[in-house]
Length: 423
Image (cartoon, rainbow, N blue to C red; front, side, top):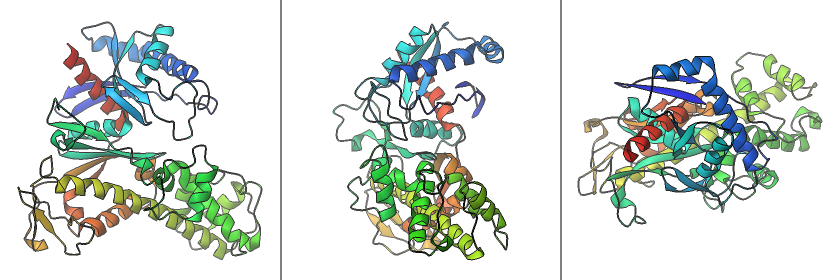
């Protein structure tokens, strides 16, 4: 829960407190989950420190306006209304799918006597985009690479064919790219991915998310290690009860393993022994485990670059929109192998010498999420992927930036805009 004070001139003040959602609440009836959120908000705003901050920044109403960051697929019919399509990321609360998630939260706030009005429903990627735009106006994409993954970007409403009468020139599109290629016809899905998907609580959906996000990377790695054990290529064919248990190999172990640069890899041995019960491991075993972690992590970063590059390419190829006609020196076709192309005002591509093109500015990509921020070499591998897909100048004109607490700040910005528009 966050309290955001927007001070102008790209400056803001943020106060926040984390409340852990228990495993029980992830599968409890949605009313129980919403009551937990409402009570957490009530406790937050009634705390002495936050109450003083609210008094210091009075509003025109006694009711506090709330931006609700909700990181699940919805059909959003208004800034303050959205019907839940399905749960992801391990949640499966009955009573929510098909219902307005804002109404469910507002009812919980009312039940618990919390004087708060839900002014805006915001996906976390949209919030990240808005938050990054507050400091970097050229932000084109907001992305999450953490427990889950998703992206949002700015589109010209003339390119949105499903809109009959656009009310603005631009609209932020929540892509929900975590569900890309659910039929598994494009992505390089392996038998280890298929095993994870089959055994997940939502098989057949969010296949892309299951290949790149922090919730699943450890389990993919565990599946690979067990396969190598079965082939007697690892640990002399011996596993452990812990390693045999689903989700026992956490993604944080991968980060720790990749960070081990010692000659003997003793820190990796300690993880294998203390966390996974693998007491007989050789230097070669530890090198194999590290190599597997590197492969899974690097693949996640490169697939993340693919999604980012596809959205940038879309923006550059459109004849109207934020990036159209700006002459960015990027490769626009998957089949182009030259270093640079520019896009004329009429949308046609003209080849240019790479060293003769001057970038008109930087395309900012705001990113939130623990995988991007903390996983070793993730950003580095993403940049490598973007360069391969968009040309050697990609690293010069695409700025990947961490939008810390993007969900909270972005939701506050959305609530502010929504409140002003209704007055």
